[in-house]
Image (cartoon, rainbow, N blue to C red):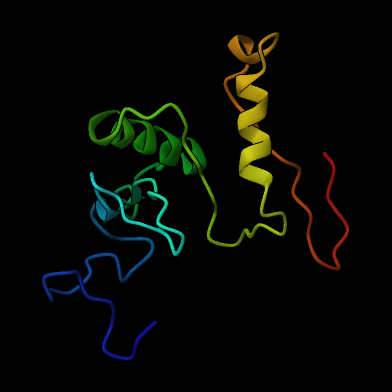
Length: 130
């Protein structure tokens, strides 16, 4: 985090400095026109969503985050795909998103598929199985 703290595009202080006590936030990084990549291809919209969090209130953890993401997506894009990535996750396969979409576009199973989740792998740690 920058020493002076994060700021919004208009220069005001970012309201989410405290991860356990902040208002809901939506920041559109790439809007309606998107942008272009280095090859001139149009980029999809990119929106950051963080739901409100207050001490003493149930936030429903990931479920609450997914519901907030669906609400925002319905209003801003009504897009057919949502991508949820936790801040501590990363992709080591550049084709993972395309592979997930292939499940949904499959002629036989696509209409029966609404959710694709890849297994988590933790570097150097044994996986916990419950």
